[in-house]
Length: 73
Image 1 (tube, rainbow, N blue to C red):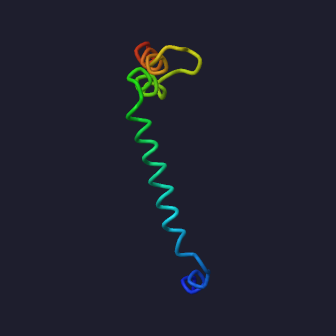
Image 2 (image 1 turned 90 degrees about the vertical axis):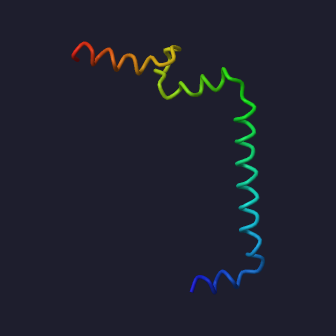
């Protein structure tokens, strides 16, 4: 039923091509940005999931978790 409704819409056949082009452009922009990043930015972004907000020390959240475990808390 839905196929007949979609086939009746004039110009619907261009939308898959447009969405593919938008996806490819977005993907390539991300790849180009990642390749052109300097090493310091990559290291900073890699440590983000481990940082404690506002500490400014990379890996602080993980070390505080391991300190609590070593103390028996």
